[in-house]
Length: 195
Ligand code: FE
Image 1 (cartoon, helix red, strand yellow):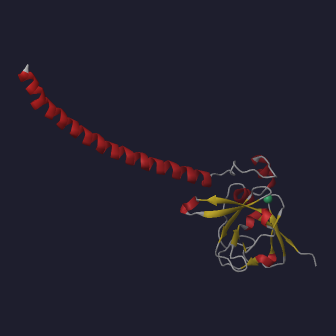
Image 2 (image 1 turned 180 degrees about the vertical axis):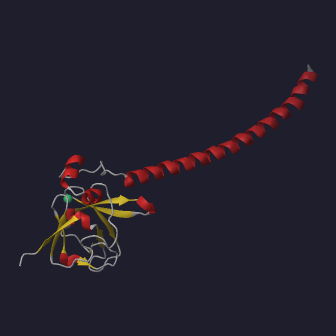
């Protein structure tokens, strides 16, 4: 009995402890690896969600706006370029839009719903290739949302009436606001001042 007990204590216990510790190290090593995999998977998944939400071709369904139409109605109403910008959050190429070099006096309205958005006297030449304004015609006409697409953190601006994507606002504008509303021409419709 004593011999058996000694065998258990002197041989089995060290072996078990040894195997156990190796196993523990192995498990621990595995755990670290699994933890890292889960970490990277989480990053990938959450990044993907971020990309998905900002690259999605549809408007953000969590925001609601007074003017609401089906995508089919928007497609019927808008030109393909207007639809791509306003409803799919697209961006026209720099220096290609109708208004980036436009200097007439008047008011720029939303091409989707007609709400007045910007006045020509707040337009300035930013050199970025898109029409730029240092303020909207009234604060309430603009809705903002955080945009994390393309590896950047930006503030998206939308028409507060229809939710149409307009562009982004940056903090590198001129006085008096220091803001630069960088807007797609395709999201706008210009109406000249009447003499
Ligand atoms: Fe609108």
